[in-house]
Length: 233
Image 1 (tube, one colour):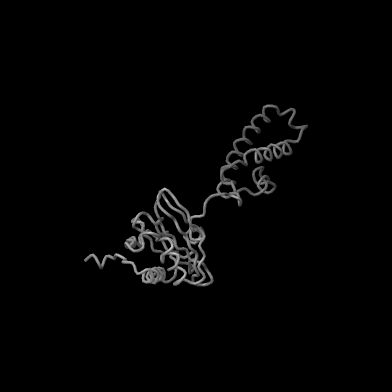
Image 2: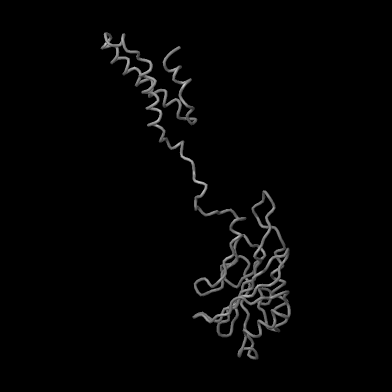
């Protein structure tokens, strides 16, 4: 049995793609050692050479184990998850650069007055009769038209008064309604906090008209004019 064959039997298995490189390096090293041992044949007859070569090969195997193929990613890695499903789990609220946020791409039922949103709605002009306290009018309309409303944010910002309400959504979830009252205009965003994905599809499943209908009930209760693309034709 040759030396390389013997070493293949006793050495631990190596990752795929690195065995041939290791054996090639081992053959070269073995040839060098054999040349050195042949030059001192008088001493080689009294000292066994095979155990030394095995020890040398084991040491070479251990010191050359830093191959990139052995790298194992950490399970505790903090790399962000970027699938549509995981993105939909984190609902961001609050103003973005002083404006109502656009709708997330993972939330197809959302409506927003942000012009960069794919489901754009026009802001609501406040009529003269309600300009004294439009926030109060909004809160009254929300209580009248929505199930189990809860007002979680009401604050004055440099960009206007910001109101956030959580209301009952579908499937035991809560939907979020955001409003920014600035001068005589109300910008808003209405979206579900829970969306459904059906494997293996990466598009959320649900009624894309649900939030539009929610806002329509609210606007009807307010009695305000809501501009639409159709009304401008």
